[in-house]
Amino acid sequence: MSRFEDALYFAAEVHQGMHRKGSINPFILHPMEAAAIASSMTVDEDVLIAALLHDAIEDAGASAEQIRSRFGSRVTTLVLADTEPFDPVHSAADSWMDRKVALLEHLKDGASRDEKIVILADRLSNLRSIHSDMVAMGEETWAIFHEQKDPSVQGWFYGEVADLLSEFAGVPAYEEFRALVKSVFGAYHAE
Image (cartoon, rainbow, N blue to C red; front, side):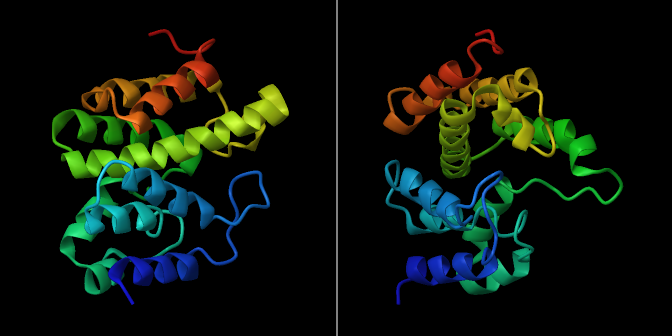
């Protein structure tokens, strides 16, 4: 079995029984889509594995040590770059802005190109889902968000991510991301 196949089994195991926000779709489809997006930007197996495992710690309770022992330090570093820290003091809703600002600061101040690929792949997959929900449900889409229901704040965040990833201009995944930011948040986000 390849390392990527092992990571796919690991991701399926840790995300077992989980579903996407407001959906009956299995959660594993999101990390699989993120890995597919990343594969359009690189053939680096560590990056593809990290895209597949990007939510294993944050959403599924896997540990960094589990990932390190099974997939190595580089994969773990890439996963951690896209993992929002757990705040034991504040609720997820109360810490939303702090977590997003921390990610933006990392993108601004020192994220590697490979970390940025994982982050772009994750956010593009999320934005595809939001866009699909907007087409199906319109403004009711925002009600399924547990932590941040304000589309103007979500638009601010996604717009900032797009600006900070502009080095990927011309790359199809990035251009799709920019187009979806405009489509979903055009009324909320000024360029």
